[in-house]
Length: 331
Image (cartoon, rainbow, N blue to C red; front, side, top):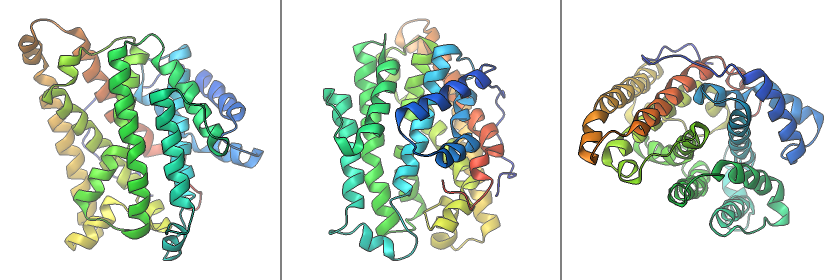
């Protein structure tokens, strides 16, 4: 796997020292939630260490806060697996996701159940109960103690994430290799970083004031962080995506721009570098944003630190993550 590709990420490398304890809690939570069935599935999940990324993305979290972070990251990875399992390679996918199939319908129904729970607190339908019930448990813990203002904007971020999945699944079935710009637009929605940045506020026990959160300045930081993480993920998952017939930014650059693989990889690496540079420039401009908003706002620095932690954290976790180390193991 191309996990040894070097990226330019001049940010501090950190990981929560509470990870070993939190990992044990998380595996028990996954077992009790009913998200996985059978010892073999649990063993594979444990060996993937996908939820460990939370300890890198939230390095200051510990105790119950870190438990929540691992549980939510684990849920996100298992949701991704659930949708990937709906797809076969080759032309057979079109029939399975066509008008008479149920795979797209199942994905839409699951996403709708999740959105309905966020918006209305509805109970999950029987066929999606474990996935929705596990998310409901995470959401109850995530939103506890947070303001209505934070809840409204975070529900919007979760809804946009969930609404992006049917589009991504349809692209996999009907347009297996969208052009690079279209692929990046879809990935910005389903990478899940925006709700994870909201989780950083919850785990850090702070909230960004709404005028600052709505500013183009912070939106630019969020986009830069998303693009950096997406680009690194596209490289780390390249061989897995290629083997499974899934879209990937490197493959899209090769087909649509006629690039050789080394040049496509270099361009994706340049995306990481430029995104990190953009983030650093915007972070350096936070003092001026504070002045524009009328005074000192220490939450802005903590919010910027959350972006930095996820950019560097994904870099460190992704380079050694077992889930990317063997293309034969299902995602």
